[in-house]
Length: 393
Image 1 (cartoon, rainbow, N blue to C red):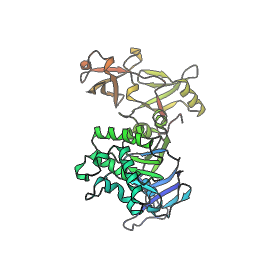
Image 2 (image 1 turned 90 degrees about the horizontal axis):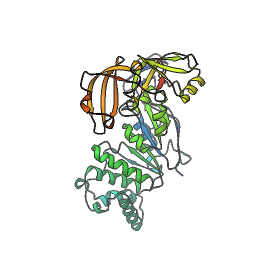
Image 3 (image 1 turned 30 degrees about the horizontal axis):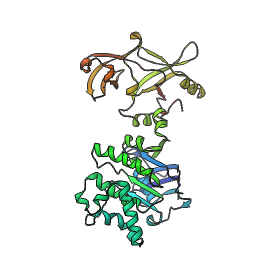
């Protein structure tokens, strides 16, 4: 069992220089809360990670995800709250005694050692029998497909091979929890795709709990059983990849998850004569789907200004010409299977993804040409313009 529980975890970095501040005063600096104690890098972090679950912490740079991971690893002191690993409170337990292993962004391999020696090193420190060391290293090398490189030194390996060695050095210890801090960020796009697939295979072959940190939402969506989306040291939403994609809790999550990001507009929520909710944007009057009707009615949402979000792949170029949103093409990007159209519409920039199978010619959308589009009631996301929270949650 390797359940990890974080209760009200907080990380405060004390002020480097004493500053005069009124008692109890708070201010915002670089989007993080600053108090008398110092800068709150992580605050009120609550999460229960199940045994053998793959959890991904994702968010922009400086959101506190790596700090949280380092607190689990014991590399950062916990300022407040409780951290449990396998049912034991480990706030004051040394990193080496937590039965965890960590894979770093920079590989952190010993350049003077061979691959075999790098992977065997943590086991030698434990004074494990030579036979067991050889067995574990051979098994890990086979799982990761690096058996043929065991006699090489890191300088003779590619970036992807080095990262496999770093992962192998971690898994030979058979840790309760395997921590990964942006392990693929130093690889090129093709290698990242390959390594993502390798990590997915790996998690099904070893019995451990994974906590993975990344700023890449594609990695988060493809790897995680659940995703923890963070911003300014605070959890914004926890859910499966499909949950956070289909039902974002707020405008930040909606804009962060999905590539290209969701389009946002200032729109009006109205009620038709039959009492049904509809959203109006320019000439478009779109009645919302039944599930959205039920969610808005449950929350007693009143008609008025809303922030409307629609994903680029959900905007369509067909419909009633008199009830379409109009715009002007600014950029047309041919992406192979689809064309990404950058449109100036409704006072904001809009991206529409049009599959090439629906086009007579990719050159049909020349720069400056007018264009009309709309969306369906099932693909609209509505947010409070002030709080930015979802009106359907």
